[in-house]
Length: 240
Image (cartoon, rainbow, N blue to C red; front, side, top):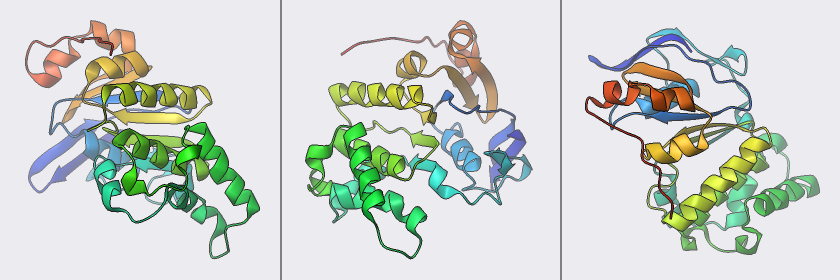
């Protein structure tokens, strides 16, 4: 992203943002409610068009990028929507193969990819259960499996653990650590700054403007939190 600005009407959501996410990076996006984190993520993925500035995705202008299967996006309210989806876990994960088969049928190789994705996220035993019957943490794993089945290179996650219990959340982040270690790029929006600083290797802290973009240690030592949140803030680390 280079000097990107985007507004909703007369209200600036993000202003003058310049940052780069390298392949294989684990970037945490932090900032107060309404700071523009989700808007920034949508701009990165080409879901919004910037008012000014330029964005490239995998080295191509984001507005012409068409390899959507390389991106696994889990939106802020995906877990809640899963409560009413009348599909099984396997059917949901199988959707990740659709960009590869086009108008053809799902074949044996595709089913192998589905099975491997289910195994990777640890929910093979839930494959035939309705998505609506899963807990929030299990549904998030199903969405990650769908992204893996699509052979995604980038996981973009918008507060993926909202409504998920502490034990499931810790297990979920251990899964993200493992996927990142395997080379998958992760961009994460998470309201718990302590969790972000424990997991992400780089942090982008914003409140309309970008107050910090760098490694986690320099973020913790900086005054970016105070600047973005407008009050005296500190990072708390906690275990469950």
